[in-house]
Length: 616
Image (cartoon, rainbow, N blue to C red; front, top):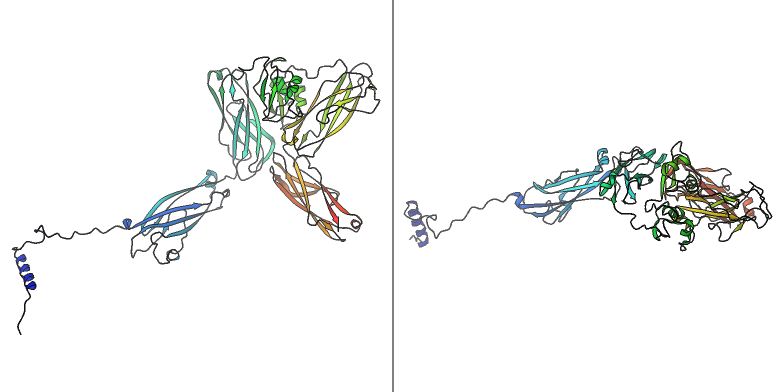
């Protein structure tokens, strides 16, 4: 057979031979021949990109050791070019539990680009974290050997025992040595546990001694507050500074000291516009009353009352309103706009005279402003700049009046206050029987009303008395106090000097509501369940105490409501129930009525709450 050698095969053989002998250029020597470059192997970090995000519910109050904080981690594959590599997903930080990779996305064993896997983590709060105020979690996810971004999550915690303090100054400006600045402190239980009973205190760099705040056995529920005040006297050295800043902390109740709270007062010209004879506007602050404001500006109290016809009752003013003070300085020295009224926490051994001497106040005016109630551990109002004023000069007409209120505090609309008046003949001749003896008191009546029996005569030093009632209105609840300013006349004598008394709104008061499980009854032996809800309608925590219900329908004696040491924060409630069994006698009536009141915790007892069940 004839062999055929194809030309292209022959060419390849000759080229190979020549190349091996060095007679034919290699590809590296021939510029027309370009060799293929070697490609670098990509790293896993080039192939995989991971994104980590974290979530936690911070709306929950984390306030207990061992309480679980639930974290969520979301691991997303932004890029994944890996192959044949196990995922090996791990998360540093709070240990996480993750589902299998094949449960997400397209359900294969690979976290493909754009797929996200959700993991969960539970962290029990430690004591150290509770005390420090935060739990910090720093997390990083690792998958396919590649680390994600780092995520830092901070979860606030609420210590079981903690105090927060706020401090304000009134006024905020000073212009002379000896000027009084009133610091007000509000201590808040910002923890999750009840604090006390204890004496809470404020330590202030501007006050030489610690300030007792509240009763010596005060209990503060979570979020409850207690308020107190102290007076700072501007020094000559203060006049050399543009501002003076003082710092205070609060303590007590088993909690650690509060954070520092500061107040800054600024040197200015606070009284430059108080020209004697001028008429000025005064912004009322908490605790002031109109007659004391007039005294503070050296104005005539009666003319100040007349200058404020917009006041439906001059005895009722509240913080935030503006009153007119005419002809300042015409009736004494101008002290304002410093605080006209301060507060003093009564200590053991205090008397009206000793307190008045300490603050430059008149003891009689101070007694009237506080309804003659001086209790250790309680605050009293102090009318500054009244020393030497005789509020009740001996009248030439020989008639005087004294007035008291029972009770001296109020806590809810509908509460009844009894006002007692005593008219005395201070002269040397018998007064009466005509005209009749009368009382003028704008708080209870627009017109004068008779006091004592008709045709009464008053011998020298003799007295007659009468009483009226005032029902607390919803408007009264908007004031810190209501004032009585009454005069007496009759018997041929002139009008007596004004008698004053102040009825304070109680910080502690109870409101009761009653419901029944059935509005009707129809047979003997039927059981009606009455549910009683006691609410703290005051502004201070009441208790710990055994609260009671008085309901003659259920029991002739009061019965307990709630646990023996219950504490009720402002606006909080406690609930209890009692059963009433319908009797044969009840079938002879059209209804049976529950008439209940609540008591306890040192608060003003509630108004009676009536609820009738109708015979069907």
